[in-house]
Image 1 (cartoon, each protein chain N blue to C red):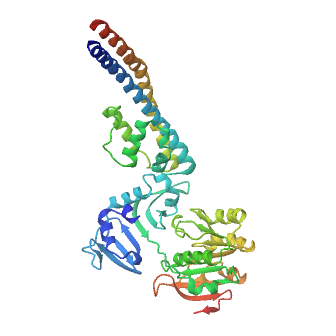
Image 2 (cartoon, rainbow over the protein chains, first blue to last red):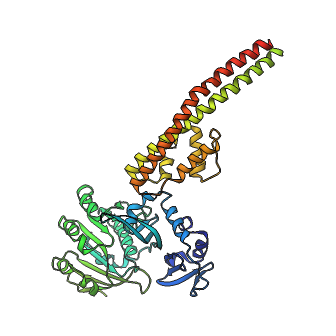
Length: 300
Length: 155
């Protein structure tokens, strides 16, 4: 996919980097290309990584336009809904974050024009990264409602994806529903998550939770990047329908989580039974700790 | 032997007239295909927001062989130099402009743009239809008449 979307010059540089450790490619108009490798930022030159900005490849404005054209297959309307939300899902789980000039009408965002920054995020499948913690999350063939938290880029989605695969493999009697708003978990339906997994792709949580529970009868719903302000009621509704929810959220640690609005409500009502804190210390998806519903550490 | 050559010449004369008529007929079919493509694009973009590439690929069999080949070479294989022999250079430019104008807007803008292009193409199609009726059909008739005339003169 990267070969298809990236300009030749940049792709040659990227090709010199080990794919397993490449996390992000940042393209900013008329600025040097920056790549994130194993959690650290480097400049990109024709031979791969560099710490020197002077020999780094520069991102021409035309590169950005060209990438948008290729990703949309010359059909901007087909990605405009995603563009409005600030990202483009370009298949294979690759997500491109977009910044530019917002075009709005009557307080309604119509599109983003003059795009000047792209953040291409490369997904990784780390097989069995959740396996060591499986017994903490699945008890007597029942999945515990779990919240996976970490700072951005610390492997929440990677962990979640592997957990879905493990549950599907080890508990085939459980029906799973994946609510994949940005196509990251299922890689735009290109990643095989298991035989008993249904995927709502590019759907809002509201729609997928309501309709999924009604029509697909899932035992557990997996979703990415929840927001306590907007998603709390739909998650609570799912939990009170007898459906378990495994979700991810941006928070560096439990203390960060405690600062979030509505967290006390979650805690007091025991909405989640497990809290997993991830960090990047030994690569994305490293488990720092697992906490129970009372926030007592059960794995540290 | 003489009769064989006379028949050969008559056949050639008829074929020239027939080719003339086929030229306009095919041209008309290509414009009809273009209008059909506009309609397909509008309905599919409105309904499922598939990319133009996908829409064309899924509907290739709706079009005549010549236009289908053009779509495969020009749009799918991205061969910008591919020509349609039944169109002159200005007509080809109009069609290439049409393809260049696609995919640059949101759904509403895209549909409005295709509708505008459809109006232009419909006018062009009407012109070609009139020419086909006048000159195209005349071509076959003239071919038959000339072939008969040649036959009479030579026999």
